[in-house]
Image 1 (tube, rainbow, N blue to C red):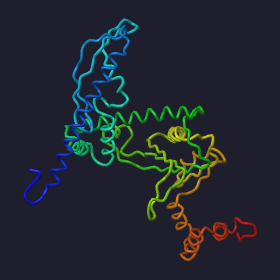
Image 2: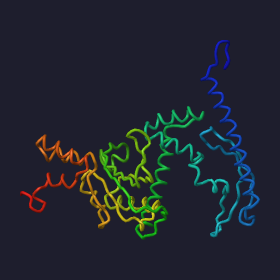
Image 3: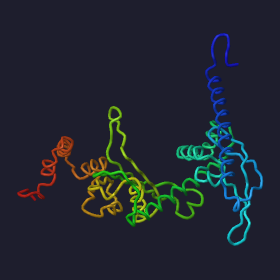
Length: 323
């Protein structure tokens, strides 16, 4: 019972409303799919595609399983081979993973970044009211990962030939990179060893304040991979070139932790490399043993008296300075 003499059971009410909305959504989804299939049937090349009836199918969505029917067609290939195809499946191909909607697949992939595949399957199954196994969650993640991998490789190839498709224009672009060592399992462990370094890169145009000492990056793009230095560098450039018109970028400010491989990014005079905030402060602490001197350097640094800071830290490098 949702209602009782003394109160409303809000949890039961919420579940019932959610169940009703999902049921309504599934019926709407089914209707749209079947109308689309009928439209494809009418518009098809009747000489190339011979209608052979309809077959039942089930599509897993965030609203639950959607049962529908779609037409199957007989087609003769150029070599004379006979095949049977579903025009609706071909139209929906880029929006589904097997018989799973793209939105549900994305939810599985996002959840698997935080939970194990088993916990991911349980969480998504409870949310959508359908059965998803941990192996199913694993397969979905692999398929989406391969899609991203292929898209980034194609973008890298376009960027390398100066054919990037980015349209956003900016004169200044900030970039950051890092490497994170991860413990591997299964086949990856056999091939790559117990651990491997995942290289991560982001690029953005700036930041906007969203709260007290809280900021969101603007125009952010990102990529991550286990590739070697050159391959990862090309992948990163491809991701940037898909978003930005790189010909309009006049300066790049690149932040890193000082690792040697990151200097691969310094390709010309427009790229300025510097230590990120943490590693810059760490370098000061490691290089300056005197506590008072360190304190003075940090005071100058955070008050933005950079010329005076350099004069104090490196007097021998300035005209008239002491060696």
